[in-house]
Length: 252
Image (cartoon, rainbow, N blue to C red; front, side, top):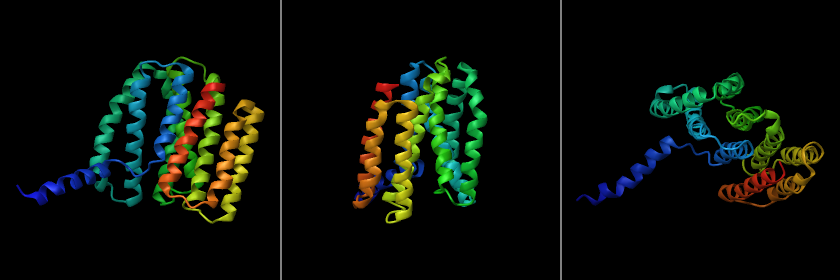
């Protein structure tokens, strides 16, 4: 047996996996947190399962669609678009057939995806407005989950607001740790935002969420002074995500 060929097989497999899994590790928390909160608050129903599949494969489909738009070479991403398109379509159709009311959210998602596509075309995916559009897409899933369960959207509106404040703040904070590291103006923007988010949550949602957002404020103010590797930033954010999840479920 040719040992060189055997040794190359794991490398080849890893390369193939990387072709179909985007290097956006932080995106998974943004995807799963609103889904988990929405299902937990509204109560699980069987269409929530295909919704999860449609949501995750839809994200993967959109990621490679935007890569195709950005590169101006869509043929490079044909395999990914086919795989995730064929997976997402029947899952989304199952949800729509089971709960047609979810189609009311389609125009909102279409508009937000159009914003993403526009920034991808201009190769400005790191723009704050583009990030806000992505965060809004994720947070809208709280309403979708409630609609599937037959629960009024007013029941989950406070959770939507809390997650929107948290996730956009996370975008700002992560930028101060990596791409905007050392930028004092951006750091002030991030810290100022977290101060306003803390005040908004305490004043408009629930004072019991104050300690959670105080923790997020301290993270945004203190950690940029430390040199942390991206994996460390990610692990800390997973912990913060779990704290937010626990806080929302305990108070709302």
